[in-house]
Amino acid sequence: MLEPQGTLFLIVLLVAFGGLVTWVALAGQVVFRVIASCLAFIPAMVFGIAAVNKYYDYYQTWGALYSDLSGQTTSIPHVTAAGLGKGTAGSVKTLIAGSTDSQIAAQYGLDFYATIAGRRSHISRQALIYLPPQYFSKTYANYRFPVIELLHGSPGDPSAWVNVMNVVPIYLQAMASGRADPAVLVMPNTDGGQQYGLQCLNDTRGLQDMTYVSEEVPDWVAANLRVQKPGQAWGIAGYSEGGYCAANIALQHPSLFGYAGSISGYFSPIVSQVPANGRPGGKPIDVFEYAHDKKLLTLNSPDDYVTQVPVTVSVPQFFLAAGATDAGDVEDAETFKQELSLRDADVPLDIVPGGGHQASVWRAALTPMFDWMTPQLAVEVQKIERNTANAKALAQHHHKAVKKVKAKPLA
Image (cartoon, rainbow, N blue to C red):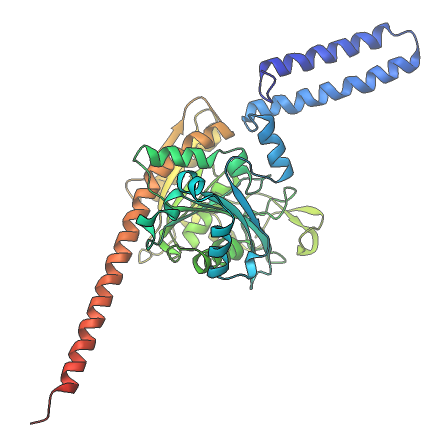
């Protein structure tokens, strides 16, 4: 098929290139040779891009390619809410109620963009948010959902989760199987542009990306959607750079995330691509954060920091995955699992056969991750609801007792 990864498409490019090269050889006039040479560059360039795309198994259809490059998501209904960063929970509810087909939402769920502005970081970006079908069900009308924050790789943006990772149909299928439970998926923009690779780090000279991703995005979600507050009923996960982000954030903020997933992630920072002068939109420059600050480097190296987390601090539970043919990813995951075993003896590590550091591996790892993480998040919600109910009952009992004492006449 003539899809981006189709063998036929690659053959067509080779034939086109061969034909143009033949024209160069046979053309009698110099002008035609020049034209043919210039034209031959096009299929050669496209073939190189297509070969890389086939190797990494990124874009499977032309629609996915167009959608990702145009910043659109087309797989499920969505609405754009550019000004929701200044809104309230009521405005979000009104937007959702008035912008979607209730029957479609009840069957497939709903995704929409929301602009989230950080007060401390001064970062403002769009996040893609997915509400599962249960969010629109009467059965769940009073249910506050757990949340999974999903972090994309670099280069990338939130739309990659829908256009490339197929996260919604994968998640719907996992729930339909009965092994996964409903949760709200939040996909923030962690880099602010595909030319950057911020690694969710707080730049000592510029953008406070970790503060934005780990604190300000969850705060906005909890204030505007019917979800649990950040804590044990929240998970964070990502692939590639996003996998590093998830591991680093989870270890540094165990009070905000109870569960973490790192798919083909690494566990110590690499060179970042940050905007010059720390201003969004600036020319990307290579920077190795914390190169001259050993303490901050250790803190932001999960493979080092995990061994230094105080025993009094509860470490989030982890899910790890890597492609079998990428020896580096597998070794990193196995080493990190060994380090985690000092705190948690049951860390799942999914080695996906037949793939390396590529999208097919990341997609394949989503189902076991959802199957592992979401039931535990649901249990955490039950614990929170039970504790809340007990606290309410105790408060009512205390209030009645006080009222009874006040009403008792003095002897």
